[in-house]
Image 1 (cartoon, one colour):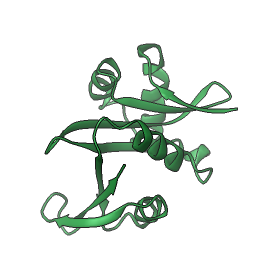
Image 2 (cartoon, helix red, strand yellow):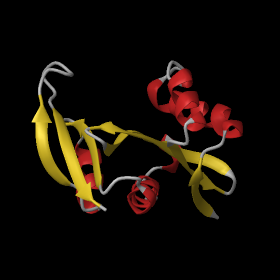
Image 3 (cartoon, one colour):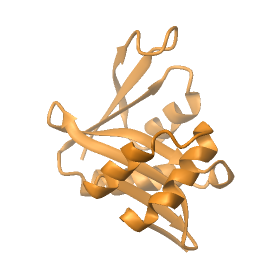
Image 4 (cartoon, one colour):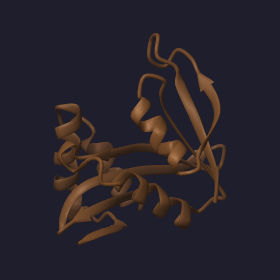
Length: 139
């Protein structure tokens, strides 16, 4: 059974392990913990196991900004990123939702587009030679 829920502090270790599977270390543990404590972390549970998570904030020009979407490599291609994004759009504290991905991340670009997000701009110079594409959606 798959459930999308707000993460609880008891989920921290499992979330950090999913993140470690993707980035190879646990360097974002404090960032993830803070997001959970502030109620800004959503997760997808597959049979009670954390399959992925999403972190957002509302400090981007007073709009919701999805800052991180991670799905365990073993759990990809099941629509979990889309389910978390749709949950956030439905429950967002703001009408406008933004996010971004690198130009080189074509998979994530397709996820945004499939979920009704549209390109809203480009930011150069964050990652050398790989511009960040900003995406936007109205609730």
